[in-house]
Each structure stands twice: as structure tokens, then as C-alpha cells.
Amino acid sequence: MTNEPEIKRWSAKRKADLIKQIYRGQTTIPEAARQYDLTQAEIERWLDDAESGMENALKANPKNVAEQYEKQIQDLQSAYGEAMLENRFLKKLRSHLDQDEN
Image (cartoon, rainbow, N blue to C red; front, top):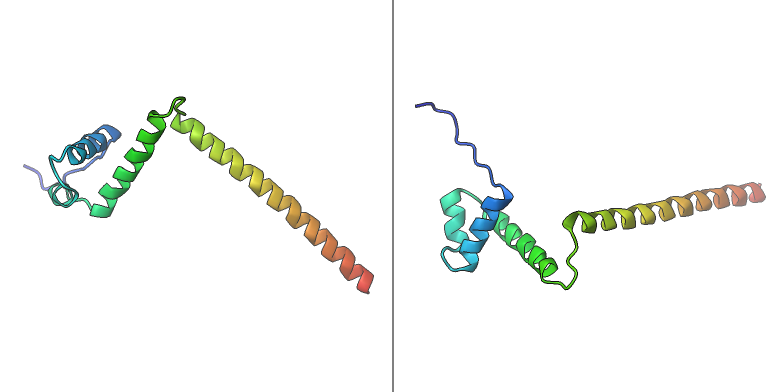
């Protein structure tokens, strides 16, 4: 027997199984946290993620999670681009105003 620490991997399937147990009343968050050496906050985050996923799955036209993230990335890139253009404009404007004052 070796003294190597046990590697604990929480795959999506394993997390889902634990969340199902909590929803079915087979265990509680504090019990699961103690049993699996997790924090309650960590399990609560998994519950929040599961609930978000359920909402999407129950929509008439569910979106793929990758599609949702891609849309968010596109929106953020667009906002970033707009902010960069505005920043450049303001720098040029300031430069012209500074020249006019001199």
C-alpha cells in the first residue's frame, strides 16, 4: 500500500450524480460536503450551474452551451471594439484641443 494521496476527480457525470442525489433528498449539501471533502459553496455553485442548464434544456429551442459562450464572446468583442474606437477618438480630440490652446 502506498502513501500517495487519493486523486479526486469531479467529472461532469460525477457532479450530476451528486446533484441528483441532493435534489432527490438522498443527501444534503452539508452531508455531501463532509463525505466528499468539498466545500458547501462548491456544491452550491454546481447546483446553480445545473439549474442554469435545466432552464436551457427545458426551453422550446435549447441552445448549446458552446453557442451561448460564443454569443457572449462576440458581444464582449463588439463592446471592446467600440470602447477602443471611442478611446482613440477621445485621444485625437484631446490632442487637437491641446494644439488649439497652444
